[in-house]
Structures are given as structure tokens and as C-alpha cells.
Image (cartoon, rainbow, N blue to C red; front, side, top):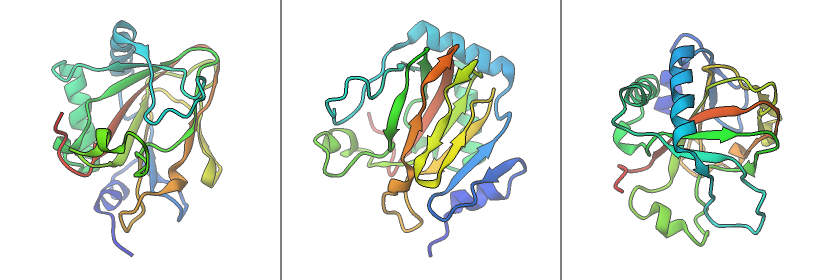
Length: 209
């Protein structure tokens, strides 16, 4: 079995907990971001949010009901978060998509999905022709909603609760590099309050858009 250098790097760092499952490579790190940084990013998301979209529409208009914000790369705090993720994971920042923020109000969710683009999907060439598919995902909770909003990885029956500053990162591929359907996950409905997260996706090749 191939060795994943990113997983090895994360395993060697204090505070990173690996999910004990052979089905997928997933790590959690509590308090990755400070409360002050989280609060600042929440403000940015509220300023720039717009309805979220999906690739390869499936006819379900309620599949993803959150709002999304492209965070400005030139903002010093956003740049610090970007650099912190690269430093922790060892992933090449040139392969990273711009950092995004998401906001979930009461009743909003992102139904079970994978982050990679399906090779047989109608929009595969549009999204992957330059930088290739997504490899790693890094997601950080910026707050704790009053109820709901957990992230459930259904293939391994693991539910991760939102917690201020908590980082969750996973490899969307198996150790041999093939796409891993066991990474399917559900951004569950917020029952009370509002949920904010930031997400950073990394690609096979340098981001070229």
C-alpha cells in the first residue's frame, strides 16, 4: 500500500487525531483557529455570501441550501489561514483553490455528497481540465450553532460536531490515488442558530483559473 506523505505529516503533529478507519484518511484538530480569527471570518462571510451551487445538478433543488462566499486572498487574515493550512498539511499552496466560506441558517444543509468531481459527470472537463480533481479537503468550523449542523461521514458512521475553530481534513482519494467514495459526507441541517465554516480544497495540479 502506498504511503500518504500528508497523512504521515499530520499524524506526527501534536493535537491531530486520526479517524481509526481503513476506509478513509481523516484527521481532526481542535482549536486550529483562534476565536478572534473565527469571528473575523464570520464577518467576511456575511458581507459576501450568495446562494451555494453544485456541479452536475441532480434535480434536487434542496440538495445544497447554504450560502457561499469567496474569501479575498489579499486579506491578511485569510492569507494567514491559507498559510496555516499549508504549513500543517504540507500540501502545495499552488494546488489550492481559493478559500471559501459557507453559512448555514436554520433548516439549511448540504445532503450527502463527495467533494471530488465525478469523471463521468457532465461538468467534469469544465472543472478539472486545468488543475485536475480535488485531492484533500480542509474544513474549519467558525462557530457552534445552538443545535444541529454536524458533519456525518455515512460510510464510516462518524458524526463530527461543530466546535469553534475545529479543523477537519480528509483525503478524497484512496492511498493508491483512486477516488474514494467512502468520503461521502452530509452537512446536516442546522436546527437552531447559524453555522459558519471555511473550506479549502486542493487539486492534483496547480490552480490555474
